[in-house]
Image (cartoon, rainbow, N blue to C red; front, side, top):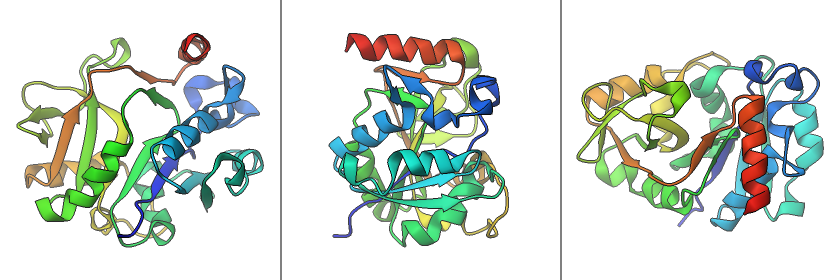
Length: 230
């Protein structure tokens, strides 16, 4: 069986992190003495992913210099370079030649969670047999995102409805979900997911453990404190 690849989204500008991200890409901001993205690469490696794709744009050369080919961290890394950030779906679509024809896992570089990322490998491999194009990990709505993103009912993710939760930034996807996106085109992930949800093609699960969106300097400091205690 072909190994499931994982992609880390690291091309964002990190506007809410400014001025920290004026000279350092968000992925390379330090938490407990190490870059955010390095913590995530190690989590993926421990979960059994050894082939990673990372998209880069703003100050992306610092990410490439910091991680190299991944050998130091026990993985192999390929980089998808974007002249301008292409939003989530656009960035994934451009990286498809590196990700291959099998379903894959995608994680935002700026989320931290105790979710077992190995579960997403199983979800990715099951997409075709279930006739689905995506599997999303959802979490309780945090204080800064009280209205949430999607509903979850009987294991299916819905664009609206009761039980609205927040998308965690962790998911598994089939390549065909991104077929409508032209190479180099900017596209948001929700624009592709919502029609698929209407067809019953998106499954999900509710993670009730720890999860942190490291989107502001305050939450970066919170993560650093959490990691130092662990």
